[in-house]
Image 1: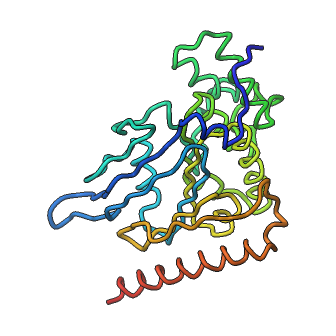
Image 2 (image 1 turned 180 degrees about the vertical axis):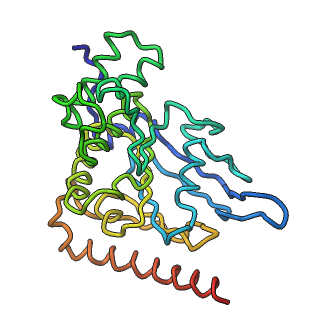
Length: 278
């Protein structure tokens, strides 16, 4: 097998300078005139290479909309999104995307789903095969390469989605509530698995969630958004040791960070409820 992947820790990935995200005075409005809806207020934030950053906020606050601007699916109304200095105008292989719905190609095997991206990128059959096998090994699914998505559990399908997203060697991995449809036990296992993959691969991760425990457990930083129209109201550093295990939930620093996030989101949710009922 070709040596197509050299594992790097996040700090080593950061030293390469790849995966820097700059959201510069970005606002997003849908519609025009009286029907216009401001989804995201002007927002400026920088995410450094190799960081794991979660976006947290009340329902409908614009978390996914902001991520879609980084992905290139949504054009900002004002401002710019840049990745490694390049202005984002459309989706690209430098940004892998994992959605809540598994979005695998049902007519292709697990192996074919992962190999599809490298083949489209111009890799030959042997190299695409090596890349696919490397990432299937990374997510623990090497034995399931010949299965079809419908034959896998939800957690396994999402692991395939992560492998597929990483197979193009993106500098940024974007994840939009990827574990939201999973049961609690599978979700926790997936969180631990993701942190291990991130530790090995070292890509920048931007992760949208509405789950406070998930955000605090995973992230280096938690960006808390206001109620709609959304804006970043807090940039909270999560100063907890890595690697993280479930028992970290009893650490006083974890509890304090969780309570802080819950309080902020409760305040924003209450404000949104009051605005809607005026």
